[in-house]
Length: 360
Ligand code: PMP
Image 1 (tube, rainbow, N blue to C red):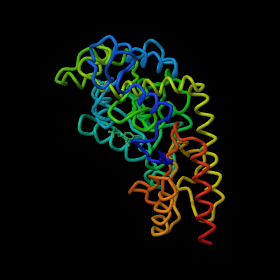
Image 2: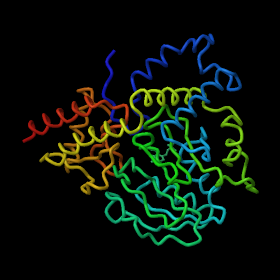
Image 3: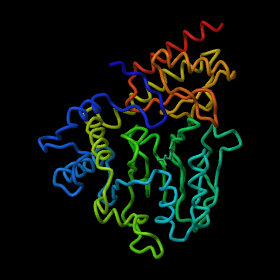
Image 4: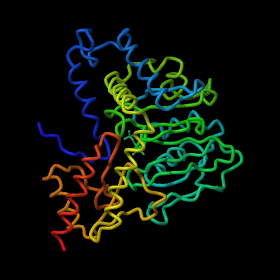
């Protein structure tokens, strides 16, 4: 077996211990005689799996009791619409546009109501996080929306916006569980798990209970947060296998020191890569503003498309895969999520250094 270092932005690398554990339980989950994939979501065994997953994520993130944790389906892209449908009773929300995913959330809100852009980093191709200390948030807005880590552009909020007393809604998909979070600062956090937490097909929503509307006339059942909140995410058949895998990752995180320890490791890995990029004469990070840099997604370029392609191809031959950048940025992108070991980042930097020397 030869595992590669997988720098994919998502679906992405998962901890080997978790994959091995899932493998060992694939035919017979803890004496049940069946795989989690074959199990009724109404069974006691699955209830135990989802209950433990919820308890463990509550411990990891310190989620207060007045917040609901929902395990949903439909893609994080569906949450661009459903956050607005559920959390904007006056059909007003204000958005900070820091890239494609924030823009898509804004565009969904445009279909449904009256959103407003209060800041944007489009002027510099989304290479920085705008100053959010004094945003022109509308007095009567329902919430302020941010995408906290911008997977494509490699930027991340390291300070939360001044919401001026308004509710904050955040897409944490590509930084979910990568560092400690003060959940009380948010009305709602949503994340697709396929980057840092599990296989594609599960989205986790952490939402303050009092924000969940009792009644939403004209809104289909499955689009209301209340439907799954009242039923423990089991109103209908959930992604049982995906939730089980997320649960194993939560356990792995708890066994490895929780989110503070993970943050320390992530900061160390990112520093190794950024330090190299800042010193390199061949490779350049696309995010120059050090205060805006993501610890999870690191885009970089040589400035020469052919050379970028040569690098990506040679790196793949050396077992460093999925380094091609997103088409809107070009160049390369290394996603270094929780499960990417420090050795993987070191191997990448060594390879880049060798490539640089051979192209002098
Ligand atoms: N938000 C962010 C920050 C993302 O990176 C992505 C996917 N790359 C999405 C939302 C959309 O997720 P999905 O594909 O699950 O709809």
